[in-house]
Amino acid sequence: MDKYRISGGKALSGEISVSGSKNSALAILPASLLINGITRIKNVPNLKDVCYMLNVLESLGVKYSFSGSIVEIDTRTLSKYIADYDLIRKMRASIYVLSPLLHRFKKAEVSLPGGCAIGTRPVDLHIKGLKELGVEIELEHGYIEAKMTQMKGKEIYLDFPSVGATCQLMIAGVLAAGKTIIYNAAKEPEIEDLGKFLNSAGGQISGLGTNEISITGVDSLHETEFSVIPDRIETGSFTILGAALSKNLTVNNTIPHQIEALIEKLQESGAEITVSQNSIHIKKSGRPQGINVKTLPYPGFPTDLQAPLMAYLTVADGPSIINETIFENRFHHVPELNRLAADIKIEGQTAYIKGVPSLEGAPVMASDLRGGFALVLAGLIAESETIINRIYHIDRGYEELETKLQKIGADIIRIK
Image (cartoon, rainbow, N blue to C red; front, side, top):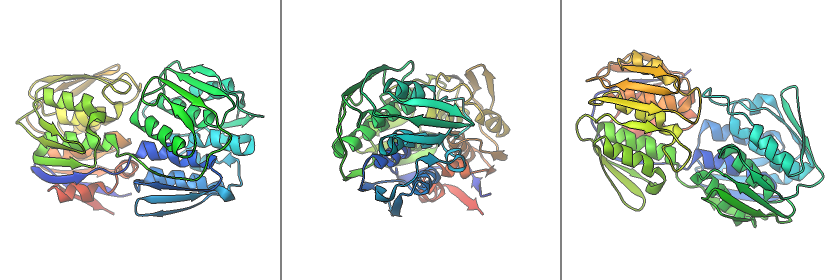
């Protein structure tokens, strides 16, 4: 397995660019199965998760090409309605193929999905919502076995504003008969992007970006071309990196208002941040001040930035508290940060961080995607060499990370 070797303690400066949104692409790619034809999607990041999803589509008979950041998908050869375990187990977003397969074949068999080990993240809300739309579902031998005559629009209330369930029900509702309304819908920008994609193909979805999404079903969708938004979690990760280490860092290809909760917390900690229309400018201002953070659904502080922010706060002047409210098992990175001489204690869903003057390099192991980036950040902060193992987790969500970091002065290399 590849690993990173990092020599930390170096100031960073220059410009770094954000790739297309992973989570947006992972919803749009399977949604393209609704279209009997060719879909052209631009600004797609070349990531392991994206490649996994394309492999899933290919296993169903779909043809695709991926050149630069442009994916073309031809679904006219779609021939299978069974999504096998060996592919689905690698990534939770694979479950998004369920609704398109139902619309195309009136039946589908999709393995229960996998992904990062950060919590249970059950698919109960997906199943409950689809049943309300008229789908018959049984769980057999680790598979979701579903069939229907026709989906019929209905008002659906989500017990929790689940991103996955909201995406699934939008994909389902766009071709359902009548009107579907999703109450307590998730409001993440990636959901809005999915809705815009579906509308570009002839869908009729309104209320995007609110907690009440209204979908008027249409008979069919047509071929379309669409560009994915920039990745807000990568934007946030690089912004935290700048607050920790930069003399003057500019993060380009961004939508700054999407990470306002993070920017406010970094400014509270003492970082100097200014924003323009498509970029963020960051300067480190001494040791950060300790702060308190609580993860919440969008537009609150993102759970995906909890681990990188924790790495930043390990060297704060004063204590910090992070309360994780989204996932019940998202502190796997804490023991590894403590191996780098951080002082973090966990009580239930709360992390108590006692800032230390500096971190010390050591061999560590990434256990999930965002925790992996936290270790990269901590390694760059540390005064000596850090080796990060199992970086395939990081490759799932950060495109050419070491190349981007090298361009702004980081001493990081990939060891094959």
